[in-house]
Image (cartoon, rainbow, N blue to C red; front, top):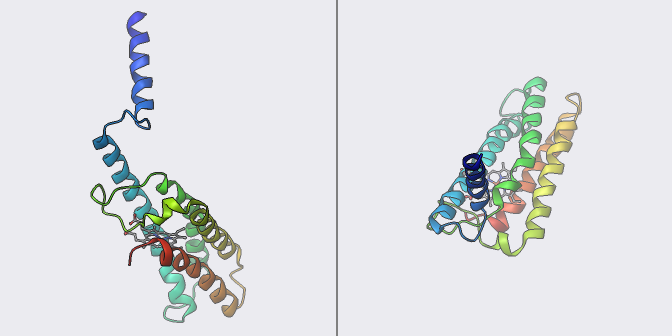
Length: 157
Ligand code: HEC
């Protein structure tokens, strides 16, 4: 009885410790590193899905409504996952990151720009495959603009 109470306490302490000021700085570095990996993965998935959409609306790839809709859905599913990759700031030596420190000084603006992306991704996913090529192109460009709009301010080139 006593033993299980102690191990339960230990488990809680471990679970809670990661986010507290008592966590070692090495632990924080590891956490930051994981967070950077996570957000890069999210952005990589989005870019991978967006690329062919750009190709299709620019006529560099044949337009295939099914592929288009699937990739647009993928982006809309992943877009809301990016924000949680910015919960903590990684120091330059802790992680290989291109995120500018300005993100953590301008949280509201950064969140707004993230939301613009999520909204544009939702609009793109809601576009009907039968919509005119010009309309599809506009939606893809609108989404790509939200990527650039944030990168301009918050990502190192
Ligand atoms: C609200 C800000 C914001 C928005 C919106 C945004 N990004 Fe980014 N993106 C960043 C930041 C910051 C980084 C740098 C992350 C890092 O290195 O820690 C980044 C990095 C990337 C990377 C590099 C990933 C790597 O492995 O180094 C790609 C690719 C990318 N973004 C694509 C996109 C695409 C595509 C969109 C739009 C669909 C988009 N981003 C929207 C802020 C944003």
